[in-house]
Length: 482
Image 1 (spheres, one colour):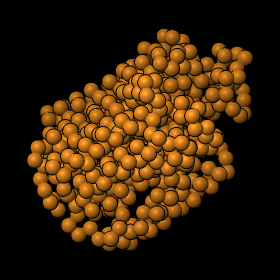
Image 2 (cartoon, helix red, strand yellow):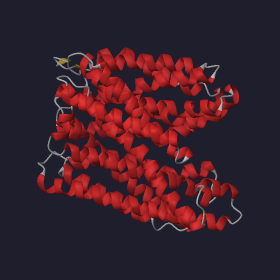
Image 3 (cartoon, helix red, strand yellow):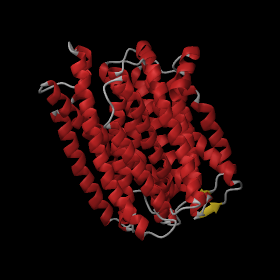
Image 4 (cartoon, one colour):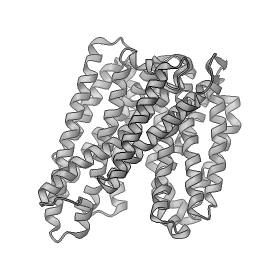
C-alpha cells in the first residue's frame, strides 16, 4: 500500500543512494583503520577477528529478516529508524575505548545496513514503476555503492592521517542524520496492506543458520579444515532446513519461497550466487598475485585494481542505457560471456611482470560484466515479487549474493591450495606460508600461479553453467524480463 508518492524521483534516488555510499565505505574502510585501532585498543587475536568480521556477519545474517520488517512497518520508516541507529552507533564507535565497544557498535551498524539496502532497492521499484527506468535507477544506485567501495581506502587513509581512526566512523553521522531529516519529505512510503505478525522464531532460525554457515566458511578459509567449522556448517544447514520447512507452513512467512517458483526467478538467483562465487574466489588470487608474485607495494597494487572498479562503475550505467535499446535477457547473456572471457584471461597470467596486462584485462572484463548485469538481475527478482513483498525479495537476492561470496573464498581457495600443495610436494600448508618461509621463492611463485590458473579455469567452467542458465532466457523470455 503506497501511503505517499515521491515528490521528486531524482531527489528521492539521490537520498537513497547517499546511505548506500556510506555503507559501502564502511564495509571496506575498516581494513585501513584496523592497524591503528589495534595499536590503541590492544585487542586479543579473537577480538581483532571479530572487530573485522562482525559487520559482514550481521549484514548477511539479518538481511532477510530486515527486508521483511520493512515490508511490514513501511520501508521509509525502516530507513529512517535504521539511519538514526547507524548514526548513533557510528558516533559511539568513534570514541570507543575497548575492543568490545567496536564489536558491539559494528554489529549494530551491520543490522542497520542490512535493513537500509533492501528497503532502498524495494522503494526504487515504487518510485520508478517503468521497468526500464527502474533498471536505470538501480544502476545509479549501484554506481554510488561501488564508488564507495572504490574510494574507501583513499578516504580512510586521509581521515586517519589527519584526525585518527575515530574519524572514519564520524563521517557517517551527518549523512545518516540528513537521511533522517529529509526522508519524510522526499521518499514515498510503502508497506504491505495486511502484513501480519513478524514470526520471531523464523527470524531466529534464519539468523542462526546464516551466521553459522558463514562463520564455518570463513573459518575454513582462515584456518583450514577443522572440526569446529564442520560442526558449525552442519548445524547451520540443519537449522536452514528447519527454517525452509517452517516457511512453507506459514500463512505469512518471513521469506516467500513461492517467489522461487515464479518463471525464471530461481534461475536468476542461481546466477547471482554463482557469479558472486567466482568473483570473490578469484579476487583472492588477484591480490596475492600483485603483492606476492610481482612484489608490488600495497599502494601500487591498489592502483592496479582501480581499472576494475572504474569498469564496474561504468558498466553499471552502460547496462541500463543499453536496456533501453535491447532486450535485458540478451544483455545479461552477453555480460556472462564477457565475464567468462575474463576468467579465461586469468588462466593465461604468467609468473612475471608481463602478467599485469592479462590480469588487469581479466579484472576489467569480469567486473564490467557483472556491473552491467547486476541491475537487471536484481530488478528481475524484485519485479517478480508482489509489491508488498518487494523488500523481502530484495533481501533474499542480496543474501544469495553474500553466501556466494563466502562460498567462493572456500571453493576456489581450496582448489588453488590443493594444486599449490601438489606443485610444491607438500601435504599441508598454503601459499601464504610458502611466500613467508620459502627458500626457493621461484618454485612457490610458479606453484601459486598454477593454482591460480586451475582456479580460473574452474571459474570459467562455472560461467559456462551460468551461460546455460541465461542463454535460454534470450530465446524464451518476454522483452523486459531477464
